[in-house]
Image (cartoon, rainbow, N blue to C red):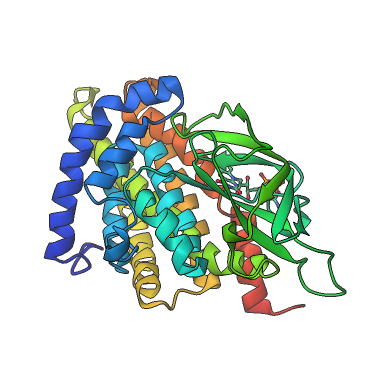
Length: 388
Ligand SMILES: Cc1cc2nc3c(=O)[nH]c(=O)nc-3n(C[C@H](O)[C@H](O)[C@H](O)COP(=O)(O)OP(=O)(O)OC[C@H]3O[C@@H](n4cnc5c(N)ncnc54)[C@H](O)[C@@H]3O)c2cc1C
């Protein structure tokens, strides 16, 4: 039995073949250069758009892929993981699993027509700015403010750790839109700030231990005037919108971790078969065999759970609790597997020319962003225990 049995159908495999061609042509030759420049070329976004790899869930009349079947997205995540392209994977995921869904769900017809076709074409890159220097896990502590002014809103605040922050053409900014009442979360709004808007500044491109090619930045907003046409949904219901979208973001991180763990094991299996020590291949050592057996089991068990999540999302039944379970489990498993795989590579695993080295560095953030492991457990415990 293999976890993939019957999950993917011929149309997903045809898509996989097209994705592989794209990766051979547009991704693999550039990985080192992107790491050096700490950014992905915009041309890659355009090529992905041309090949129909962006905006998979966007209706066709808006130039998207027109499919709610999340298996296609997961094929792309798996293949990018296998290619060792974690930064691109996370940048594309931000576009497809985070920014676009907000516009699809909350956008008016006019907003959807204004932004989505160009996002699907890779001409517009999106970002979401929730995190602030003093508000990460605790989103209710967000301090950025938006105050109404005529029909517009005036936005002030500072955001940090924003994926695609430097390159983004539009940023969905989460800001407090009024005073907190006696109970419940404060009122938040989601405001789309476009490139070139006066008062919108980009700060440092942050140096990270991994995901070197993913641009992660600080952003600041000083008296930024946001027209009513750039407000998403009800400007007081932002917290509810965030809670609605976080399950998909978390599922996508779980899918990526699963793919990356499988990729690490695949590279390791090849390596231990050809690397010899004490007169025989490493694969002949019982320690290697047990490690590989344990990792293959962990990956297959995780795959089954993540695939249940993928089906649930496709059917519109993915819950916040199940997404939290998938996220913490798959990302912690990913971290363990990559660490063990690197050990089996010995000193070569520590050398950047081996993909396992980059994969080790890239893996570390998975248990942190999109809601840290501890926060996932808070969500699950609340469901299991109720309010003690
Ligand atoms: C590479 C990268 C890309 C990112 N991209 C984006 C992005 O595009 N947009 C965006 O808005 N944000 C982004 N983030 C931010 C990310 O989502 C936050 O870093 C994350 O939510 C954790 O917040 P924090 O860093 O403030 O940590 P903190 O909230 O300060 O947490 C620190 C530690 O305390 C633990 N902790 C906190 N509260 C509790 C609790 N109640 N119980 C138990 N433990 C707790 C946490 O789990 C963590 O281990 C990104 C971060 C990184 C590193």
